[in-house]
Length: 255
Image 1 (cartoon, helix red, strand yellow):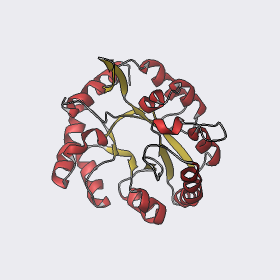
Image 2 (spheres, one colour; image 1 turned 90 degrees about the vertical axis):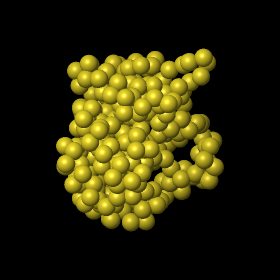
Image 3 (cartoon, helix red, strand yellow; image 1 turned 180 degrees about the vertical axis):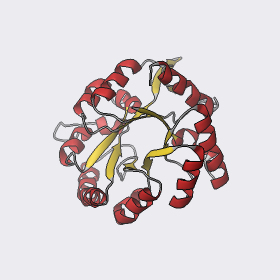
Image 4 (cartoon, helix red, strand yellow; image 1 turned 45 degrees about the vertical axis):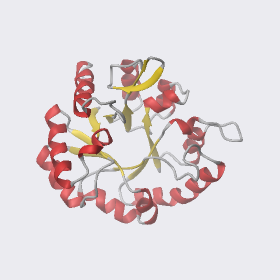
């Protein structure tokens, strides 16, 4: 497995092409060889290819424009070809109410994105779905939405970028879900969870309460290729320092 940095962590430093370029170099200087491109300014795929090469990085997966994925998956596949990326990521499904998933939202996503997933596969790409906690809510039939997504999309058409933090917040057993998704979790988001003064906070990997050693072992057993460090909120700490803490912890595990 390879350790990667989810660039959403440093999104405030990728708002221009110049700062995006510098950020890639800073991430590489920490030691990362892999990134997920997410939350950045607009870029030309050829530009990104050159910048990744210059920094000695590869792009494991993206979170790409959801509407573009839906409306022109062939272009999306060609864009990803340009910078050598197989996995096309969706950060979440479209929702009429951002706070929760409705039955209508779920059915519309399945209807709209199964054909998209087929087109991406025909063009050498693999659609990847990223969870938050809301996918662990139960639908009217008693199944949680994440389970329904697993059942509604064939494994050959869609994988899952399991976010271990949000799975825990959603009440899921993280290791059990990694096992359930065996063969469908080539990419996993690692962020830790800690409690300070009764507040639930995100933390660098290894600095919280999640059993990261067991999670990493489960990922290995389930065929995960990329462990992508992400911290949505660093609470005033330099996000590059947070990425470095996570990197050093994971390297200490022998990764």
